[in-house]
Image (cartoon, rainbow, N blue to C red):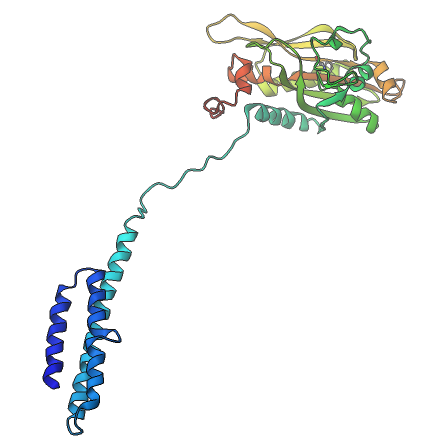
Length: 330
Ligand code: PHE
């Protein structure tokens, strides 16, 4: 029996030296260590060993069992750690991380935010109104006669006889004055819609910011001062501007403000940026404010044109294209 044990150990060591992958290791386990393997079988034979031999044979058998098991364990451990490190090699920690694109504010939103900040500094609060408006708020309450050409289907996107896509932000003035009694100092940004031929200069959708101030003693000089202060802050102290007399049904007197635009290498020209005036007493009556007691001024400016002037853009359509190569520049 003792010689059988030492023979088994030799054979085991031989087989062990041939193990070179997980498959041959498993074969080794099945041959020697599994329930029907050689080592457990030797333990079965141990029952037949004579009494006086039992001690020595028992010791040798236990030694064999511990030896084979330890050898097997240590080889298995090696294979395990090898396969682990080969998995690790697929993870290259020096690769750059995945880049996620963080969205940014559209140039128009940035411009609106900038204008809001300037007027907040002058004590204006911000209000918004709906893009789908009643004909009354967009035109009637603002003193447009029924046959005014702006009501023409050519300019206005009508939804039905009484509703339309607002053509300017002035209806928000009406909503505000109906709800809030003076003093009012309000700024009202938003989208407006006009059924115009699309070109480099005009688009069917654009943005405006409306301003409204109503109080007991407001003057035209104050309106001018506010707007001059604004263009200097927005375009720079050296901006060249002018006011021109104009007409709007909802203001009297009315004016338009132009700034001088000098594109590099091209001929300069005046660029109209806003309409303004003193709120017509008829409008105050329409919203239930006493024109004997209160006076107001209003202005409305486009966002696209000042933004284009400020950032040197010459085609309005690019602002609505959602072309990321363009948008990323700002
Ligand atoms: N709503 C006018 C427009 O869209 C601009 C304006 C607003 C004029 C307020 C005067 C007062 O052209």
